Length: 49
Image (tube, rainbow, N blue to C red; front, side):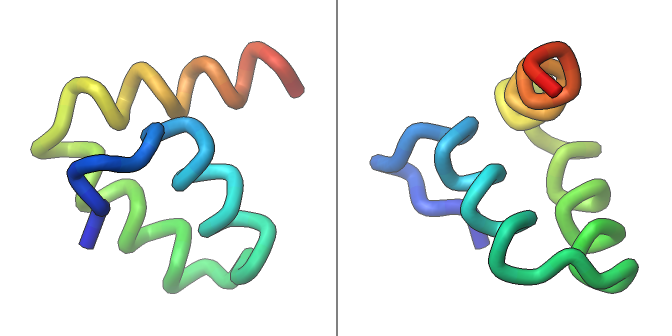
């Protein structure tokens, strides 16, 4: 679950650094499917490298 009061980009980076498993990435992708702000954070992370 995504914390409501936390910066999404920071949350995403932390989630991916702590657990890079395929299962975790798919979980995040599923969450992003329903949250446009999280999709924006995903693309921000991709753009930054």
